[in-house]
Length: 497
Image 1 (spheres, rainbow, N blue to C red):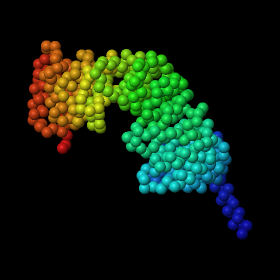
Image 2 (image 1 turned 90 degrees about the vertical axis):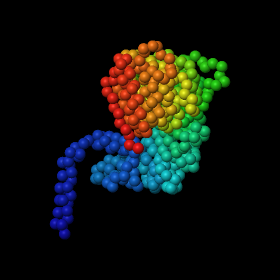
Image 3 (image 1 turned 180 degrees about the vertical axis):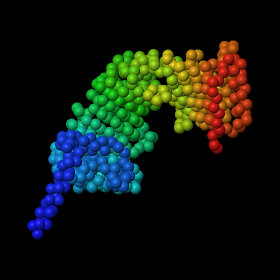
Image 4 (image 1 turned 60 degrees about the horizontal axis):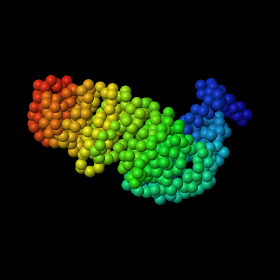
């Protein structure tokens, strides 16, 4: 009996000796702790995926659930994890999360600040009973919330879940709400913050509210502000927020509502310096004047990624670089640009952008009438360093030859032009070729060749009458060649029906 016990003890000692020789055993505890912390924190930022080796209910192990997995590797890791409250503070709550598990995680996290990721179901077929009970548990720890992200929250669940957070959340650093809403509902519904979130948040630095309109709060000291489908606040409120957020790195807003109508005159723009701004996206559905006012106020670095969406008739000249010196500096070095034309998904749109889309400006018309083409695109954004322009037409734009002529005549003579008609109809192709021949009905000086620097033409479309299209191309490019405007390359391809 004693020999058997002695042999067993020897085996344990030998196993421990082997483990102590492993490379991972030489890692100091503080370094091992940091490795665990980074792994657990980053696991909350990745989308769920099904994996037989590491999935739980169809989701990859995330947050504190990953702490559970790591704690089962060996006794040494388990003791390290159980003795480190910070490693249990990343709490990912989904529909299948049992309240007993959440209660244990909250206990193991001690008094440390919490990062909570609260995710509703992808479909209405899944019960959300556990979500409601878990929300009640988290609400009792609201003073510890440092980060809160609510995702896929259905309307009936959202009201109940977030209403539980009525106590002040004074330590909140990051707030993100992504809810299930149709775009129409997002534009019309204004949802009030629960009082816990609506109270002054002195430590709040990041706000992201998507597909939900909320009452405007006087945000300050933010580094990131993302509000999509937001009912527009008064201009004075919006300007106040921007003035009190000098460290903004991300500013993304899609606003709805005309706040400048009925106002005799907008106040003179006061410069708001945002020296750290990395991403700027402003879309204002029905108040062009207010959008231009905000653009005129902002001062940002030339490296900032810019996306603007303008809505209107554009019947008068509008030089955006005149309104914004920062915008003028941003476009000064652009050498290759794309002018995209289309209406595949709704309003008629013209977009001027760089190939990597780090700079995008869109002009939207509502309805059938297209006016002011000479005042958009290069007519509104002069690009002094432009060397190559790519014209790209989508498959259903209602363009006429006169429209194309106005667009083509904006192209500087020093710029090489490539044209891509992707999926265009025969009507669009004939209209474009008519504009290239100078037979569009738009007056032009005698002997002037429209877009003389056109060097590449690519036509990839579904042709209803290929013979007629090819004849029109042959006539057009022969005529242009006689006038000294020769192509360098021509690509023709018929798409499958």
